[in-house]
Amino acid sequence: MIGAIVLAAGRSTRFGEENKLLAEWGGKPLVRHVVDAALASQLDRVVVVTGHEPELVEAALQEGIATIQNYEFREGMAGSIRAGSYRLQGHMHVMVLLGDMPLVTSQHIDRMIAAFDGERIVAATCDGEIGNPVLFPKTQFAPLKCLDGDRGARSLMSENSTITVEIGQAAARDFDTQDELIAHSTGPNTS
Image (cartoon, rainbow, N blue to C red; front, side, top):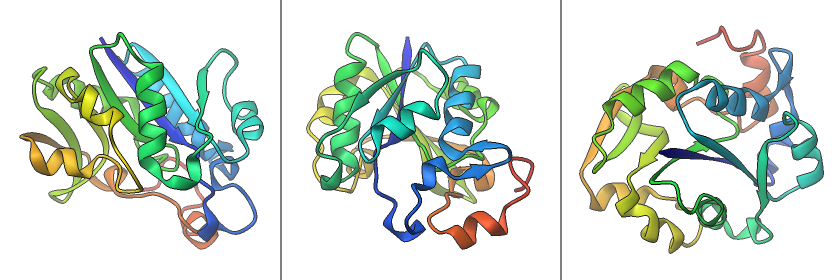
C-alpha cells in the first residue's frame, strides 16, 4: 500500500497576501489540482497537511479528504512531512507531493509507482534534475518522522539509492509568485 502526503501548510510569503494554494488556476485552486491527481492515481490513501489558513485550504478540497494540521508549519517542510507520516501510519510506503505543483498528473504518479521496487526511493526529475514528487519506501518511514527544518527529505535521497522517473516540467514547476501563476494562466494544459 502506498499513501500520499500533500504538503499544503506553508505561508507562501513570496506570493503576496493571498494564499497561493487557494489561487485559481485552470478553474480551481492550485492545491485541488494536486489532490485530484493523487486521488485519480493508484495511490491507496491521500492526506493533506494544512497549517497556514487551514480552514480555507480544507474548504478548497473535496469533501471527505483526510487532513491533518501542522501547528508548527512555520518551522518548515519537515514538520509537515512528519505530521503526514504520523497520519499515514500503517501504510507501507509514502509519496510526498507539494500542493503548489499542479502540473503533476495522475499519470506521472502512476509512472513513479510502476518504477517503484519496494526498497529504493523514487524521485521525479526534470531534465535529469531531481524534483517532486518523491516516493519513499517503508524503510524510510522512521527517518521521515525525524526530519527537521525546511530541507524536507532531500537528505534522505542523498543518503540512499534513488530511482528517477523523468516527468519534465511537472517535477520542477511550482508557483512561488503571482507573476509565475499569470505566466502560466492558461491552466493545466500549459507545460
